[in-house]
Image (tube, rainbow, N blue to C red; front, top):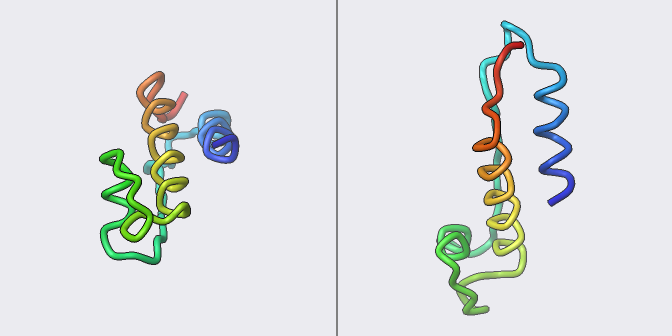
Length: 73
């Protein structure tokens, strides 16, 4: 989660008029695992720990971005 916050903090510090937005990718091995994790499901055959961690990082990113949207200063 700290890496997610650090990425957003860096983007905020370096924002300028050429910044288009924020890009993030997540990878999970099981189909639908990330979506299930976002919904709070924790059934191991369908939601890996990797998917749960990616969903937690996504939630942190959304919370941080809601505090102050990225954009030029």
